Length: 429
Ligand SMILES: [Zn+2]
Image (cartoon, rainbow, N blue to C red; front, side, top):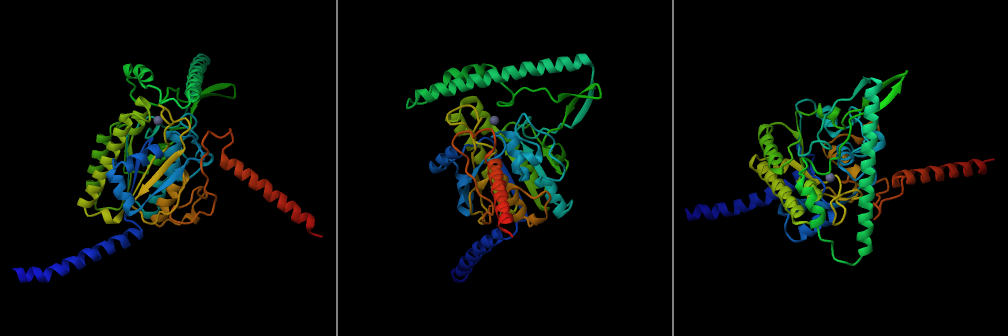
């Protein structure tokens, strides 16, 4: 027996060494599967602090195999609809029509990662979305146009005006509070109790999701209509084999994702697994609360269970995992009105550089072997696995003036190009 063991030992070592080497080579090759995991509302600085404290072991393990890079939000609001739409398409809001939670439409057909992958690989390729939110991520309301009586139109307009005023008053109040906090300056963080209590007394089904009337009143040919341009995900959801949303709790999202991995293990797949608790706890208790920490740990735990399931199924070495967020959180507050600092954590060793929110979809598509140069309209983002050919912008510390930085930059570039053209034309005889 001993003799045999002495023979086998070197073989085991060789196998382990080669196994590791093959594993890495495999990870650099095009993946069989990709899982995009969303930690909704995870602030980058907070995440880095927790990583340093060793509180996010599953994320750390992925990063050790791949990378952790900074992602900045440059176009679109730092909110859920704008965020996930951009992450799932790779475009600016001008292309998708999704600017914020309040200004959106059904994303035009064909632009989402789901639709692109189905087109590239065919129907045998599996697309799954398991989503923790309801209103701002997941909801699939169909576009409609409905004729209204004069009274109905009037009633809707009045209700919308009332909500608008309510929203304005709330924004003013928040601004005043921010001002007060800024004036307090070096003072330690304000006690959270007073702002926290009223919210707890009246439990909201989904923190951060505002009230709104679906649709807007328009007049055409003397008639009034209520027009709704659809939820951002309405068309893209049809490309998915499974589209589950409104699950709210990480436990429900995570356990369904694990179940579906088992179900689809024999076919190549793209999973979008969205955990909502970080955002929900941030709205309830604030960015620096222990509840926000706990929600991050919950998302990390489930990320680890997904990895464990992939390993159990023998799929881990063929699967790239990308963990990201739609937006960050306003420092020490219960809002994310301007929170442009997010991240991408991955086991993909080819991810090399920092980027912008529109770069995540191109990264996934490019790794799957989709020829990005053939996509129409051209993607706004670029893969994070290759050097950028467009400027990689950093979000400013404070909210930029109305025009977005990219637009400003493009305008400046256009103006400069015009000038050069004019100068060249002038120089010619
Ligand atoms: Zn939120």
